[in-house]
Length: 301
Image (cartoon, rainbow, N blue to C red; front, side):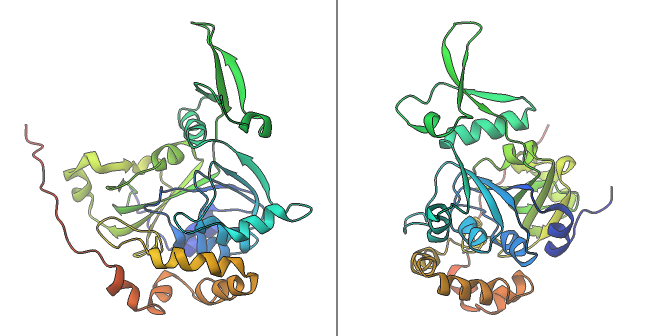
């Protein structure tokens, strides 16, 4: 099988198109800002961005004019405040961003149904919330076995999903450890998949520890090797979350001028993630992970 390894620039150029539904997943952990920045640099437009928690990564993409619509379940800057580019787009009259809101489990159910190639997913209910009134796509079905009324949400099948992982081989078999979200479901639900990794390893490394393989290469279209690609998010075993950045984003995003200056310097003003890191040499020293090796297991037979 040929190698799927390409540059970030080439992966985004080939697989992310204007008007696509794009998912960049990762729950606090392994959020691929490097991919989002390349989407911004390539000036993609009219995207539908989908994500459980459209935190700072989508705030930046909204500020850059990439998004037409947001499908989500919670929006904010975790532990630090609001998303002010997002708020400005929603509060503008007329609104500059269409919203489609679910609960966290509603989004998980949508992606799980999409991954299973089912038309919809079923949940216990949305009792106690106003979401069904705000979102006409949240509907009800009667259970054919019990007659019980259940909530139903449509399957979500993105055009492209971008997942960050600690390592993969050149076929795209990607391994993840640490905190996970719905990366697997989003990848299996998607038409195209880009895997971004901290490290490219030989196929023998993947085969030696198969239980860590979250995304199989058979559904992957492109592999990008991008160390520090998650910053300011984190990659377990490689670098820590940059909490200082998230706190600073509260003030940066409040001011449209400061936000534009940030994008000009750290997104449009660099050619790739390596240059992004060279401009911030203290990051590696401040956030680099110290080794803590887990004992291996025996797969003997």
